[in-house]
Amino acid sequence: MPAWCFLIGLLPVWGVAQPIQGTVLDGRTRQPVVYAHVGIVGKNAGTITNEQGLFSLSAKNIHKGDTLRITMLGYETLDYLVPATILKTREISLEIHPIAYDLPTVTFFPKGKQQQLGATEEDLLFDVWGAGGLANGEELGRVFRVPPGQTVRIDTCYLHLRRNNRDSLLFRLNLYQLEEGKPGRPLLDHDVRFRVRPGENEAEDGWVTIPLLADQLILDKDFVLTIELLRSWAGFGFQPIFVSLAEGEEPALIRQSSQAPWIEHGDQPFAFRLLLSY
Image 1 (cartoon, one colour):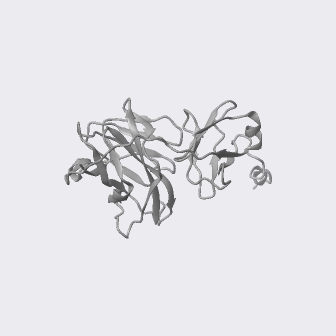
Image 2 (tube, one colour):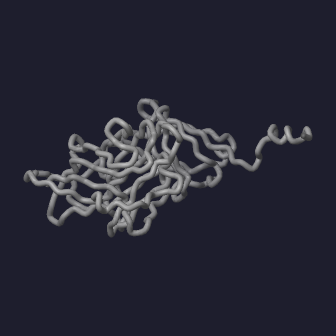
């Protein structure tokens, strides 16, 4: 084999953009902010911070003057104009500051009644979202319509996963106002996370149960519920994770990465179901 064949592997790959490495810190405590959304506004170029507040963004579609946005429940939104220096150094450290949310107060007087909204077993389709499975930071949502004149409390959420062979999955559940058919203003004042451990109480293919009674999620208007994959621990075979679709009239709502625009996918919503008290 010619000697020059070995030299190719030693040369730098000039055509590959090196990632931008960064840290997100609490501006008051200087501690890492875990699982914050970091991304370029309007582009599918986003991610979430890890347990050390670190993130890595591909620089392929990032340009000088782009807006890097950081959002996290309990913190002010930070919009940072990307300078040319960052594209050279590939390193950045940013701070976000705690803030108290002024969320509307909804009075709830339960009458001891319950109902379910969303997908049932009979509604399930063989179709799933994503050719490569669910990615960290990807957010999937479904519209829920509150019956007119009612105030409801979400007691339990169910979602249907397929081909989940990971040792463990960590998700975040989000609620948004429904604005022009898509997620708008956040409705939560705290992080709602849940973990899925196949083999303990959930099968590789099947319904996942998320108890929410302790979170006191009370609503009186139509809303969007989303789930977001924060982290996965690999299992045997490294198969991708899929979320099932179901029969319905509302589209599936997808945000492929942090700060990316929301997109609608057909008229088959995700297989989410809620148990409500009213």
